[in-house]
Length: 342
Ligand SMILES: [Zn+2]
Ligand SMILES: [Zn+2]
View 1: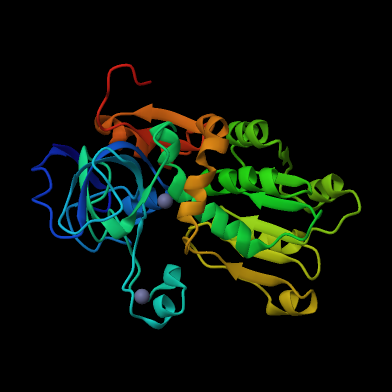
View 2 (view 1 turned 135 degrees about the vertical axis):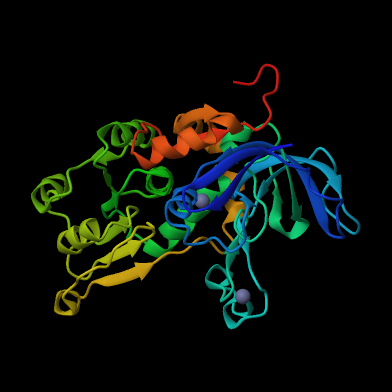
């Protein structure tokens, strides 16, 4: 079968490989219908930071159809539409036992610690799949995992009722957070991104207002309201520094972006203004909730798709995305081109 494997930093290959071996107990074989390219896939390709085995079929955001069930798998049937949970957790550390599996001591991700979804087929333990509504476009279902990440971040952010919220970065997580907030929050949603096309797309789909990332521009948009909730989805230390200046006293800055470089911050700025700085990592139990939102969000999620490609197009898509050349949020891979599909 065809698959996209990461060998080392900068070394991504489209190859013909043997299909996954026979199923073990508790495993399922999935024909991948659609997969999304994530910022963390690009980060791993650029830096090799999370390479724990080589080569590894990349991809942790995907949806598919069950092709076969291993022994003892209950609750699923061949032909079921499913989405994959990206997290591989140990289940026994203090975090896992305490219901915080997203910060498991041994947390790993599908595509890194085991083969992922940038392939025609993948085998996963049944514990890592969630049943999905078959009538929803697979490209949309492939966005369930990042939607769960955005849901977790939005929950951590806990925007006060009626209060404005600012999201920096209109990539997948920032854009999906804007979509969720436009649905469930009753205050103004502001978004900022240096890529004007991407910001425009997010604003159009979510109704969020675009602002420049300066204290003056954000102040004008807020009129007289304090800005108590800010989400950084860029991971860029320079942007985070600016956001710490923009957030109002007693406000919260939640960080969900994965970037690089270190942050120079005067702790007195946080103390005197009582700023809460909160990290948001992956998700805990939000994936089924994200899947349940899919039918209602389908049209708007489709409007956020950047390009649809096949497996051969993945290396070029990585280059394009790393160069910042995207107008949409999510590049979708269709491993098997079915007749009549877009
Ligand atoms: Zn992801
Ligand atoms: Zn654990």
